[in-house]
Length: 173
Image (cartoon, rainbow, N blue to C red; front, side, top):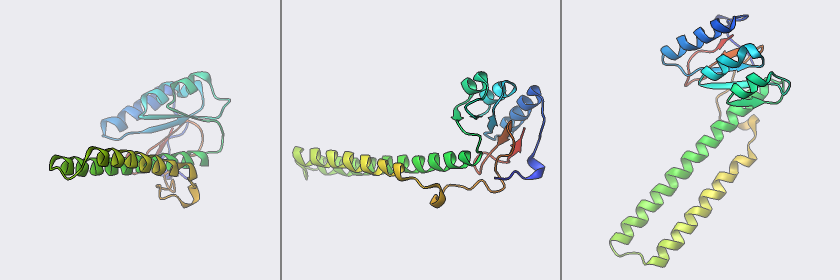
């Protein structure tokens, strides 16, 4: 994982990290802060997504974060983003499928083309399909994921602020 040099802001003081995050938010970006120490806690809490790294990290950083990675391996962050992207895709598929089938079912029922037992069978079938589709996330393989890669948007040292295609530029703190 790499960070473009022009997006790296290393060795910032806690107040500077907060100001950088606020600047990004004022610009309409949704920053992600990655850190592991007490000095990162406020920035982790302020960022749209705060990620605490390492199980030995400061308790304040862990409690302020939205996500805690229990490893120092920064590639895990890429895997987590890929997994979340895959899960979100499945959620959207399930919602779209269930709503479409239920709307069609309601339309057919309103015009007397379905009996009650037909509607019940359709409803239960939709439930089964949605649950089975949702379990596909259990087979997630980051090596074949269609999720955005972290190339050029990756994470370097601890205390890193980054974004992805929806959040804007990557910055390291």
